Image (cartoon, rainbow, N blue to C red; front, side, top):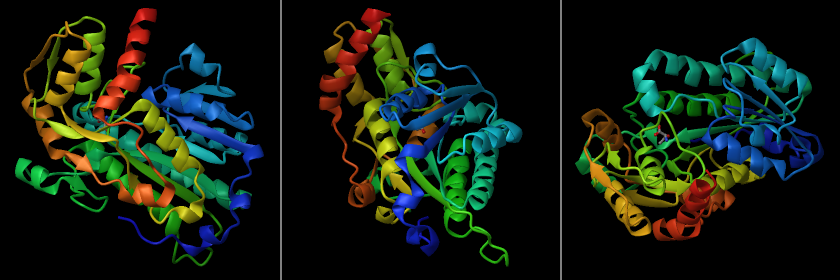
Length: 359
Ligand code: AKB
C-alpha cells in the first residue's frame, strides 16, 4: 500500500513547493458536506485563491467565500484542464465522488466519476506540473470502504485495522477509492519510471481514509454510514427514525470539524514528514446502539427503531469496527479532539440544537 517516498519530490526545497502567497486551490465536489467546511477553513488565509467546482451550484454563504465557482462535471476533461491551467493550481482537493450506497445503484457511473474523474485530474496535474516545473499537491479523501472484512468474526478479531490490512473492498465505491489511492501513489512516486523522457512532473499526493462523518449543520446523502447522522438529525427535528442497520453495527467515526481539521492539516504538512501517502484517521469507534443511547439521553423524546436492511447491513459488516491511526499521529501529528461522549457534549448537541432553532 505505502512505499518510501521517491527522492525527487523530497529533494525539493519545501519553500519551492509551496509559497503561501501564491497558492491557488481547486476544490472539486465543493457543494458536498465536506466542501463547505473545507472552504471555510481555507478562507482564513487571505492569500489563498479558492476555485470551487461541482455539478450543482454552491449555497450562497459558501459561494461568497470562493474567488470563483464553476458549475460543471468533474469528468469534463476540457473544463478541468481550463480550471487547472487558468488558475495555475498549486493544490487540488478532489472531493467529488459517488458514495457507497449511491454507487451500488449505478456502479458503472460510479466508476466513471470516482475512477475516471480522479485519473483525468492526476493526468492533468502531472502534465501541468511538468510544464510549470513545480509540484502540484493533490489531496484525496478515501474511506473505510477500502477495507473488506470476510465476516463478523474477522471484524471482531481484527479490532483496529492498519492501512495495509484487509484491502478487499466489497463495494464499487471501496474498489474505486482503493484503486485511486494506488493511482495517486503511482503518479507521485513512479510515474513513467521507464520512459527515456521521464519529464519533471511531480504530484505531491496525500490521502486520508475517512471514517463515518457526523455533521451537525448538514445531512449526508448517498452513504451507508448515513445511519448515525440521520438518527441525530431526526431526533433534533422531532421526527421518528428507523435505523437500517442492527444495534451492534460498529464502525469508526469522527465529527465534521475534526474531519476538516485533518484535511487542512494533511494539506499543509511539510512533505518530508510524510512516510506514507495514505493515512487512517478517526476519533472513536461506536455501534449504532451506543449512538442511539446517546441520542435518547440528549433528546428525551427521540423515537428510534431498528429494522435492518440486509444489503446495507452487509456493507457495514464488511467495514472495520475501528482503524489504527498511529501512523497519522506519528508522521503529521493527527490528534482526535473528542471521544463519543465529548463529541455529543461539546459539538453535536449544541450545534444541532442551534441549527434547528435557526431553521
Ligand atoms: C459512505 O457511507 O459511503 C461514506 C464513507 C464511509 O466513506 N460516508
